Image (cartoon, rainbow over all chains, first blue to last red; front, side):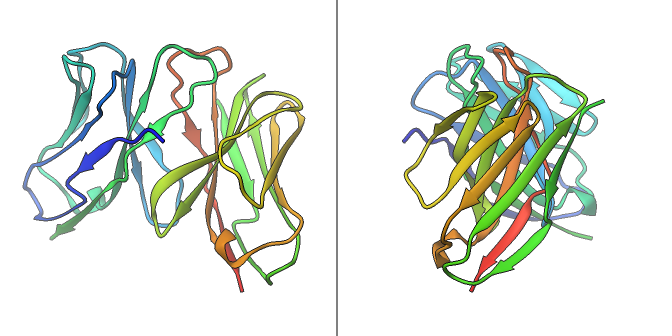
Length: 113
Length: 114
């Protein structure tokens, strides 16, 4: 089936550092979503992107929809311990009201105080 | 506002026993509904989705089935559980007819099959 390549698979950083992760695909997406999942909980939507080139921020988080529509990145500035978790990208092909998302495999972030 | 509930939160079942997990959504009408399974805390696998009452699409062949008896209720079932059915089961919803399909997840059910 279709897959998104999400990298890095895991990161271990010092509190205060900036973080960057990305997703790439061999096919074009019309929507990119970024989620965060805390241990034992459901993923929470962080940022949604709808247009190629779009750059959107949510507090210390910034995400961009790649110009080629085949990639997206998420940056976290000045990381804090509560940023710990698994971050997932997800993409949607076309414009469909069934909207089956394709998920990346996740980036596990650990922050050392 | 919209909320999504799942129960039970955790479940331990013997191999061969039946399963019923429930998901309900409040605060919206005619949502799209989804069941995912997540193994080992990574990788969401779409199992079923539904765009309306009684309408179920299966994504992968498996030991599980889904039903949507009411507009905002989605049920995941099995007649006989396998060890490989263990995992974290997530229900999600999105706005019906929404072409951009932001999906919103429930809190999940941790299933352990022994």
